[in-house]
Length: 463
View 1 (cartoon, rainbow, N blue to C red):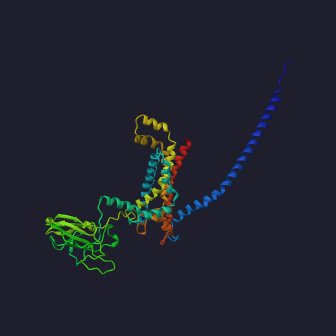
View 2: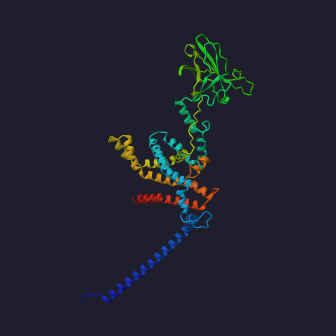
């Protein structure tokens, strides 16, 4: 007979096997839970110091600042949102808010645009690496040192400030500079004011009579470099009127008025006009020794005029650190520092752009501007966003550049929130309530920018 298995024994064996598997799975589950608990404990142990530091250095100060911003100057009276309302009602605080908006719009955009231009233009030149090194070099300088440098760059005196030296040089290239600002005659001199800053001789000139045109009011150190000791007018030749224009001043005293003394200099380059019936009939320019000659047939009987162009104030350039330009001037210093940072990041992104796309566009007939605008910039958009967001966060914290560059007379006009935070918290008229409110506002301004950046990073990670 065939063997028939015992169904009871089968069921008993299968139940035993299932119980054994269940016991094993329970043991494995318990072991796994113990491992997870141990891993969490180890992770918590490693994270605990960082969490303590985070709480002590970030969470607690933020919470305390929010609380302190709701109290008055002394911290004893609850004032609610009054400190925040002061940001839009107080003139200096409102100026700080307005300037921060200007910074937020201009500085990151200009620095990023310059970085993009530098990165693209230096990509194909052999000396591009050296140029990038020079542009990036300001990043090695602290904000304090950069502020001191640009405080000197923006000096009003063209002899000290390079910005005004360049500006005055360009201006004087297209507009003739005055040689003798503030020069004037003395009452004893044969000259009188003619209106508009000009001077005329008291009497008409005659052929055969030398003319003397003395002036004072020019510092010897400001005389033209080509000026030489003045000479008495020589006897005029036939058909000419001669004269001398000189600085009627002798160092140390001892000179005589209306007399050409040996130590006195000629007014080299002084413009002289002969005027009859309100019309200029002849002109001359004084030589290095101050002598000049006019044709007698036209100048005889005319009065001599020294036009106002001889005496107008010299152009001293732009008041870079004045109330109207101090904020753009400080932004210029910031861009000088951070354009290299933008260039390096954008250059790294540009190196990752597929070259075949650029070459394909050129083969299809696109010019370089079209390749840049329609291919390069869209492909660099993620990098440009990173640079913009980083600079926007950095701009909201700018303090030392404004504090160092802006002089005391213009610091209120250049004020920003970070500087006002320092002034409100540690200045002579400290108000910790307002200072805490400014700190909270700065935090709130940074949070949306950080949220955009975090969202972008997560989106890039999913790809």
